[in-house]
View 1 (cartoon, rainbow, N blue to C red):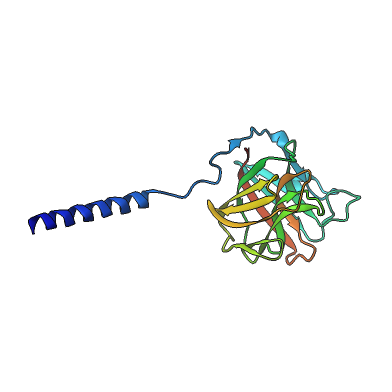
View 2: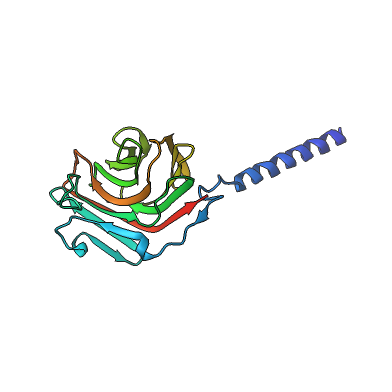
Length: 218
């Protein structure tokens, strides 16, 4: 009987150790296995209403890029028929193959709704491979599939992985995989973030803030 009790205590101790080990483990970070791409300020190209000075739609202070736009603003180019925007376009980092990743911390204030906050520009038969829009504090794939909820008035970490050769896109929010989908074919791609009005935008004033933007590749 004494031997049985000793064995039972040993098993319980081992189970407890395994539980503690599991508690100490965490999911893999989305940037694991990727190499960071060196960035300079020249890589951050600003697109804003063409007839308005940049400082009236953008500020950069204490590492935070603050972008805003109004529904009645002009597009970024006099010859464009697109919606108004104030966006960072990652310049000099266009890609056509490989596996690339965008990382940034975004903040969208309550009230900004129906607006694109991040995208992969370029596709075989469309302007973009991925559009992420905010609707009432929730992040959606274009205006459809739900990606994440409860993003108003807080900083959230956004990671977007684009496997060009595999034609696949994966989205992480706060380090957790939230969405994945087939891409839209080959193209010349680049990442963007900021505020870009949807065709049927809901709000007159649109705003987002971004910090710690990084680009990775494999």
